[in-house]
Amino acid sequence: MGFSTLIDILGAAIIGGMVLLSVRALMLNSSEKSNQFQNELIAQQNLVSIVELIEHDFARIGYCENTDSIEAPEDMIVYADSTKISFKTDFAQGFQNIRGDGTKDILTYEFGPTITSTPNPYDRLLYRYAKGETKNGSNLGLTEFRLNYFDNLGNELLHPIDTKLISYIQIDLKVEDSYGYDTGNDEKVHSEKYPTIFWRQIRVAAKNMSR
Amino acid sequence: MGGKAALLLVLGFSSILLIIGLNFNSVSGSAADNSGKYFELVTAKEIARTGINLAASNIAKNPGWQPDGNPYSFSGEENLIISVKDTGDVKTITAIGEYKGITKLIEVKVRAASFSEFAYFSDEEAPTGEEIWWTKKDSVWGPFHTNDVLRVSKHPYFNGPSTSHGGSLIYQSDAAADEPVIVGDYNPGLTISLPIDGVSGLSTKASGTGGYVFSGHPEVFLEFAGDSLKYKFNAADAYTTVLGSDLSTSGIIYVENGNLRLQGTVKGKWSVGTNKSVYLDDDIVYNDVPDFTDKNDPSNDLLGILSKENVYVTNNAENSSDINIHASIYVENGGFQAEDYKTRPVSGYINLVGGVTQKTRQGVGTFNSSSGNIESGFAKNYRYDSRLQRMVPPYFPSTSTFRILSWLE
Image (cartoon, rainbow over all chains, first blue to last red; front, side):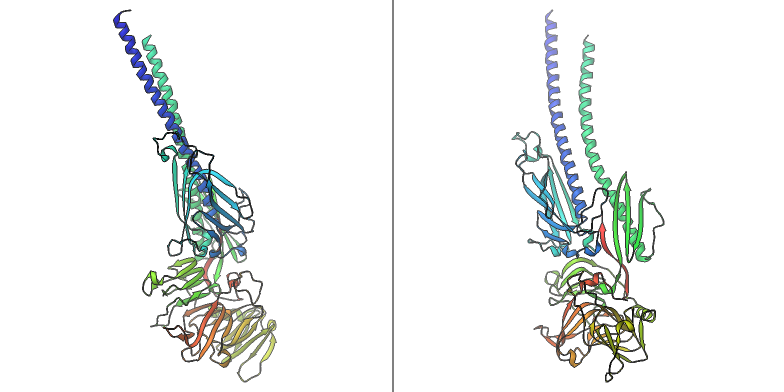
């Protein structure tokens, strides 16, 4: 083995090492991005689940299968503030039968307390419960649930909200990944650790309130 | 040997990158699927809403309309099915929208609307050449509509469930000083035509089976007395008393070419009217007075008063200190007013439980614009009878529109 062979081996080792380092960096980046995308996907799926549920429930504000029992529009919402709303509705009898049973129910949405069991310091429970039932909350990574109310002339209602004057509701939602990625990295800001999705529904007007 | 190693190396890296790429593709695909699914659901819902709007529009033009194009096409696909079912006086419109395999059902119940549902309706808000403002002293409880402009001053209160007007909303100075408080549904720019055959419709019904028509008398005095009815044709005469159901089983009484003078205690459902004017000579109230705030109050007493010309609160001794009126009033060419309201003495309150539909808004009194005190005639105390949202007097003109009772989706 001559000198030139030694040089060849050293060169090959250096080039091989550089290639391996590149591969390692590629793998690390890929892994990080993969996790980030996965977490964004989870947040997005959670958001869609919440939005579908909220749109379904809010579209039924004031609905009752027994039309004689339907309240006047101004009496359909019984409580409202920036993080909680209670309204009259008539629950679907099942997944296949969306009609109510003709009995008025009261449904409440309420932004709950911060969850301490997840790395994300801001995620909170969202309660959705019927009157008389236990508060059951779900953790879907909700970090913002804000309700703004407007009267018939488009003026935003001030707190405390006079529920009789509500004509439109604006809903703001923010969902973050509860577990995040690389959460111990102090160089990253919160939004880099916890993928965030924002949704705003402007001017929800329940059809039963517009009769 | 070196060539084979290089080939293996390239293949190995390619495999790793391929797996990473597939993983990314999978995540991206799931994200797209997720938002796509939401989009498809929303689109299916919008197609169903389109079907409801299509049916409602056609039913407004032709109440007997039935869908004849099922399945309807939306964006080139046959993905909308509409059905209309009549159950009594309620129509149930169902629309099923379908998009990319996702179906969405919307069901709406509607009912023909009657003018009796209004707490207040006017075609014109003031006699020609005059302006009448709704002020901070005014509040309307119940459905409100005018085809005219709505003039407001210092935050009048309209307590729904629906408020609408055909002309513009006019502030005496500006929105900050005058903007009204409107509770419930609000529809500016809506016109509901007042019919020209509403009173003649009552005449036709009264001439039919079960109705009764007084004719050949310039005045008919009619007093409700529980189960009985009293009538006479001159003030000085004695009343003739009959059982109400003997005179009219349908509860419809019409005076042909004569004024109707009315008072008494109403039991059951009645509609009375004339192609001349109606004078309210004294209280006309229900036997079983309902809780007017309760839509489902069990009282079965209900009165419709219809006039072609005007409905007056008579200027007489009986009405010199308040008058109580329980009725839904309809005036086709004139308005509801107090007789001699500008010159009669201060007479207390008009305590109305029911509603007023009129061609032209008229006066019941005058007040001092500085103090707000009544100077002649009556102050108003109008309360809406919530039962009018579900009950209609035996005959009352229809608005030719439909009211949404419930919306399910």
